[in-house]
Length: 316
Image 1 (cartoon, one colour):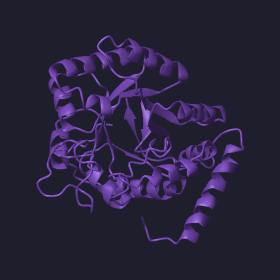
Image 2 (cartoon, rainbow, N blue to C red; image 1 turned 135 degrees about the horizontal axis):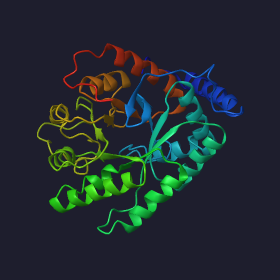
Image 3 (cartoon, one colour; image 1 turned 60 degrees about the vertical axis):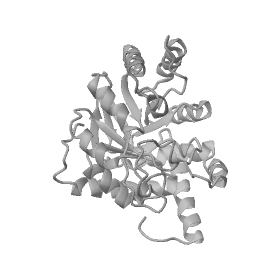
Image 4 (cartoon, rainbow, N blue to C red; image 1 turned 180 degrees about the vertical axis):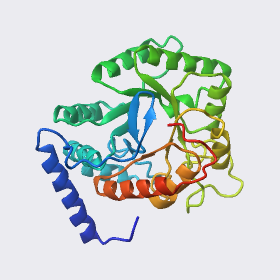
């Protein structure tokens, strides 16, 4: 964040951003070539994707706000369906062309409405249906998503984190192949580094990874001795082994979208984006309220331009 802001400044800035986006939504399209910014992009298969992607947790009201339970309700009251439409339009105006989100029926209806209004936001979505050995229900969910117009599907990190055994990795590979057989690319999400290790060792055919990356230099970060690579054991630590993650990803020859880079709001974007790009990420996934988009896009562009001599080649 550039500077502290007062409540009055916050309300004024948020209102202006919302008003501008609402005007855009009133037109035939969510944004026009004359007003739309072109953010730096890379490639995920055949998809051209902005280096900064819009995260979906704030839109589904899952804020990862630790024990501050009221924040979930606050987000739900702020991010109404119309506000989400405004946010999508504003993101597109600033060049963010891809959203990553997990399946929530209410959110999917809003995304479909955005497209009906002329929006072009690409969707990368993970099915939340359990991945069972027969893959029947999971496959049905995948086919519905393809019919709904998803651009790419990824294996939810919550699922993949539980699939590091030999049997689990075999099933994960079958799920990836099944997604790709439906004509869309497939990524693999993970909080745990072991997922990436096993996928690489077993040559799982995912097209890209969505892997957490953030340092631990924040107030509620892991304390000395808390080194387990398990976000479930230490709530609030989504990348338990950041240095090891950077080292392993040097050997991975696939695009990498880094997520949880701000540790759910605990790390300022200037610091978080710099760490992620310098650590080897090809893209950054960031949850953003509408009033944060313009600033975060500026930070991402500046950081991307200033990132030199990375330990990992750009794979997108």
